[in-house]
Image 1 (cartoon, rainbow, N blue to C red):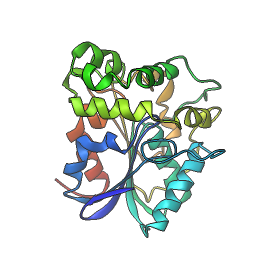
Image 2: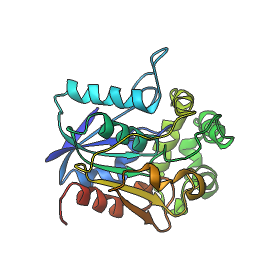
Image 3: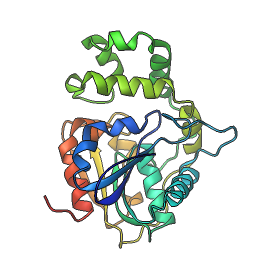
Image 4: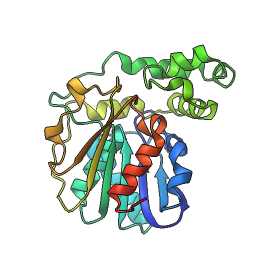
Length: 258
């Protein structure tokens, strides 16, 4: 768990195959308004995967809540990307008295028909990162390698920094929890209640190929009071493509006017 900044606690939860490093593009700015807390999910980043560990979103939400309790962080704002967004929604449903606001950034779990198997593209990113990691520090200096790794993630991949790309490849290549987390989502969707007392914002990009609008952005599964926002020219990681817009929405949800 990494902490920085000053102010009310803001907990950031990364997605499947990612790590807390995914928040670098927005973290230093959020530090000005919040005490920012990021963590690595089991089998991701610096957190090892324990044998037999439950990796479904509900169980991961309980783990994060327990970890925050151990750090005496009882009340917090919350933002999560992809699987992290689903985990954040589960946390708000489980412990609404602790969650002060919630921003789901391209959250998973908002599909009417749950997946019953890993879809084919699941293996591609993991395979590429795992078997090219030794070459990545050199190859990511060149546009063709960045296109191969990130064109499906973002329409703005050409604007990504070398550091962002390398962090993402390192995170994916070392994510032992990638497939367990995928299997933990199978046959499930988010269908729990989040009370209106929690301000909720749901953000998707108009170019999200990972969780497309046609199958993975079902508004009826989100809280009825949620603000639903679509960012233009933005893919599955809006905090990379539209960082200042994401920062503004986190601030708005938390009641901080800028």
